[in-house]
Image (cartoon, rainbow, N blue to C red; front, top):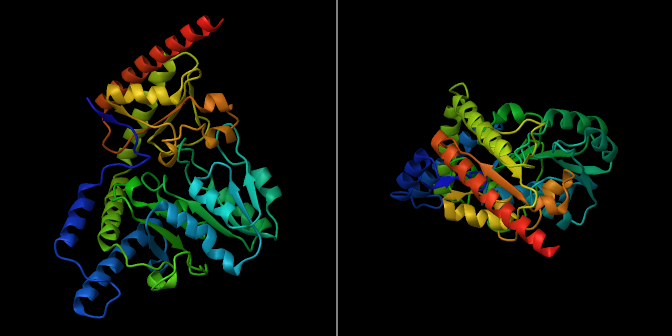
Length: 387
């Protein structure tokens, strides 16, 4: 059996997204910026997709900017407003690198907001970091490694009270597959999403902005997307993103049966690992998490070796964010949560998707226990020999 437990990095496109994209690619080829009827068809397709994305996120259609993915959307959210604003950037220490690295590249003062052992931001520290000299606050809706859900309403209240001139951005990439975004994001000024995390294609995302937000482009050229993001739009990808969001919206509309089922399977997997592996630790269990995330630490076991054995056993997983998966560096997210550098290097991120089955979870649980036990035994033998 082959079991894919890396949906946080990217999952299979939804059949509806594939069908919509193939339908367009088989007949559509016009540039949306043109004036003739072929281009008008492309522009209508983009506009229809924009309406769908806006509804899924709870923003107006005019506030949707199509990008090449979540990274560009985060970069635009951080850097775009700064031309018209002075002041510092406040960002949580567990943000995705697309936010933190953009903030550091801005040349502005960056004030890092700490988190507790459960991964939740320190609201008291947030209050101390906020003042009239803050231009932007960025706190993710759900973490890309642990799946921990932040209380955006509580963050927004502090921002409005202590830094009323600041914009509030949220990276909603990991929240989008599972959460009701119109209610979650109603308190934010900007939000970022990515297509391949929720059943859309790779290479497309969106930044949603409220009408009062002024953005300067970070890509310069023909002035597409209302002069906020130049470059010919990827019509097929935008259509696929919209179709995937429509499918996810329908899934949430079924009373969240899918989310409940996946969360139950996630808890089953975590319980199996905690029960069978001595010293195993689950991350973020004291906080709310999106249904698909099971993040574990296996002290004394190297993540790189564990992932190699799991791949041989037919289980696809990761040690953290996919953009860093080749480096096997200790997770900055875990270290921000107070985990030691050594233990942060023993992490396994297991992320389920809407179609993950009970059989797959049980197979993966047995394989992980077997591989961890094997590596822990090898580690113990090396320690004895070293003495």
